[in-house]
Image (cartoon, rainbow, N blue to C red; front, top):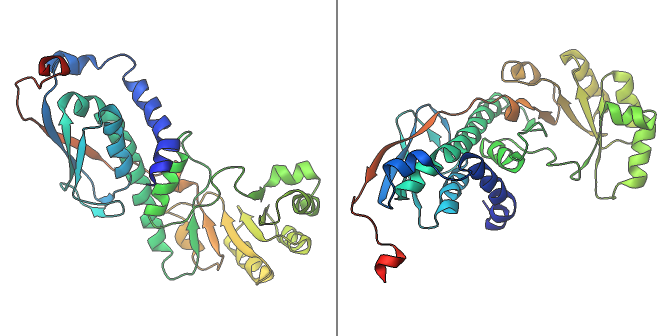
Length: 295
C-alpha cells in the first residue's frame, strides 16, 4: 500500500482499533512479561484462501513499536492453504501479544473478502463482464475492504459520495422523475463525471436512454428483463446489474451480457479467512537493556 495512503487513511483507523483494545494497558501481558524480551511468533493459515492485508497487518505492530519486523513468506493475492506458515513476526514479546488480536482481526477480514471475491470472479471468467463492489462496507474500513476486493481480482465502484454521480430511486423521487434527475445532474455535476442512473423496468430504461444516461443500472430486475434491457441499450450506454448478487445466484447472471455486475456481498457477506498467531518463542529471558541501564 502507498505509504501516504497508509499514514493518512489507515493509521488513524489502526490507532482507534488499538486504543479500543488497549485503553490503558494490556494487563494479561504485563502480568506474564513485565520486562521487554525479544521473540517471534508465526502467522499460520487455518483455511485455504487468498491472503490480503499484509501491509496493514505489519503496520499494526510497527505502530506499537517501530522495531517490530514481519518476515513474509507470501504476498497479497497469493493462494494459501491450511497449515501454511505465512510470516514470522519478530519483536518485543509484549508487542506481539498486545497487537495480536487487532492485527489478526483485520487480516482475517480482508483475506476473507479477497477469497470470496476470487471465487466470484472465477464464475465470470470469459464472459466479458466485470465484477465490482459497492459502498456497503464496514465503517472506517472502506479503503481496506475495497483494496481486498481488488486483490481478489474484481474492480471498485465509487469509493464515496464525492466520487461519482449515481442516481438511485430516492434521488429520482426527489428530482421528480428520471429525465429531471439526469437533466439536473448534467447541469450541476462536473463535465468529467459520467451520469449513472438506477432503473427497475424497461420503460425506465427507455426514458434513461432518451435522457442521455451514460450508465444504466438494472436494479432487482429478473434475468429475462435484464437480457431484454441489454438488447434495448445496445451501445448507447454502459450497463450494470445490481441487487442481492451473491455467489449462489451469480452464475444465473453470466449470460446477460451486462458490462458490470455490482455486488455488496463482496464486502458485507464474506466470511473471514481463519488465521492464527502461534508458536511464540522468547529468545532471551534476560531483560533487554533500557535507556536507563544502558547509561
